[in-house]
Length: 234
Image (cartoon, rainbow, N blue to C red; front, side, top):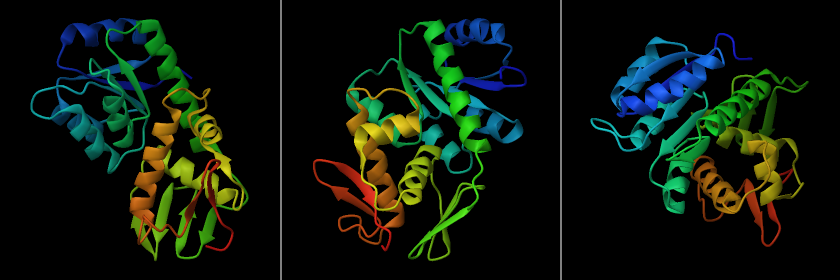
């Protein structure tokens, strides 16, 4: 698992990058360094990066902007590593495409464990194949093998987590998924206190992308007090 894995460490603090690199190299990972978001984007375009550790507060381009720009074209896991520790900071980071959020000061061993978890989840989901590659619901088309989503044949850009949530609901039409169940199925870890907000933010983002009127959704229905579902005939 750890062989031939390229990590990109993006932080303007060299000591933090060097500390993470010591532990990451012990796992056999190859390390790339960037001091800001602009350098990160350049490295992502030049190299095959498997996972990104991304600070928020950096010169030239902050981590949130860099995350959004990377997500426009790439789907590798992104872990935000930031001193900003308020719930809204975490929700903002996750809603812009990050897969996990770790606050500073941090335990390097815990960070390595989170890296391994994200890589397992990513490679497991990417390698999963099913008999039916495409799901069509009304004017919505989901292609699993390429992680593509189309509405009226127009491709819609989605983060990996957004795609996983949409695919989960679409593959199990008419089944109502509680928020905790969505979180555990997609994030592959026990539900936390912030799971409700995390899932709700991702559902809102998905609706904004696929619904003509997100306030009156055609596809993802809210079942109040229970969870979410996609109806068989939407």
